[in-house]
Image (cartoon, rainbow, N blue to C red; front, side):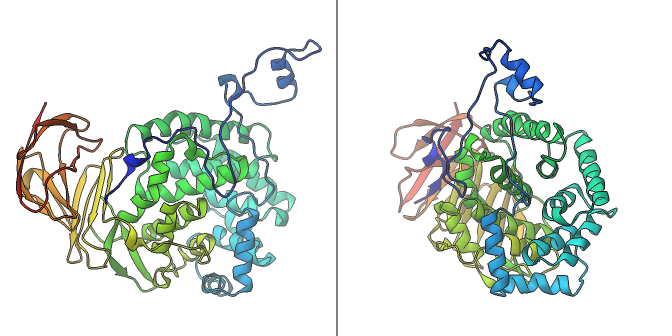
Length: 481
């Protein structure tokens, strides 16, 4: 049985999500009428200093109500991490080894501040502050240090970090997910320390950037969230939900319900062995040596997805995929992320139960595996790129040059750009996918001994045929309507 995102089509976009923070949703308020006593409500809000950017558009202002530490280390997670220290878990020992040995850390402010929050070692916190005030620190790390090391900052350091965060927020905003995440971190860290600017930036991020740009792009099936941006996206989702009690997923629940399985199926089967640990390598349009930093962030993204919604079946499958000791991030870059997000006590489901075919009609992506073994063959069509993985290597396919269908364990893939006629002989487990068609265009389909019918290609130009007879040679003819 295929897993298809269209089983979720009947979900109401106003559905409440049940996550670690309980039920949450957006409500809107308007500024109308007058208070009893005669002063207009709008004037009262102005006199009280309440920012009106979001309210003037009939939207809730985004407010932060959490104490420091606010970013990523909410009480439940901090308790878990401190228990990991008490248990001297392998993940804690790895981070402690790097900190105690003064290893050269790629993100020293982040790693030292995390260590300080868990251990209470003030020396580590002071090193984090020094790193954040150094010339190579970025806005994200500066915000984390301001938030996580707040009680160690002296007046001069607090003024300097505040000025740096304000300067970062004064820069023209970028629509990129990593840049927006970093600006959100800065705004949340500064909230209650600087008037107006943090809330104005959070209003912009939630209402203008997310609701105004990202959500429409996701709904249109565009590649709004590249795979390499999944980790910064989930840092942003955690930060907004933890501090403002807003679940940004509510605007497009079908996409986010589907995302953990999309993430899981978009790994190449083979394991990459590196000196520090083994890696699973996520798909990339570019063929070449794997980017191990990106591989580490891909694992961190999966761990952060599980932490965001531990009860969803999809994330439990992903948890089952992630909880193998050989893939624990042990390098200086990955170890802080591994310790921050991994929860080995969270039950997971066996990913061997996940169907071998993943087709998402909303995003126009197709992933097919021959099995869940590391030696499996794998086919992927994503973001306009078609690839085959076999015998330990990736091959980029050109559908214009492929006349014969490709047969895998769960699917037969035909290439519709070169011909409108196909001959298939399906096993009981296989379905038919025709690729290379015009996105969302209608086609007339004729199957031997069946009546002609009309069917549309999806957002990626994929047409799925589920009613092709099995166990005998069958001809399929296809033409645009």
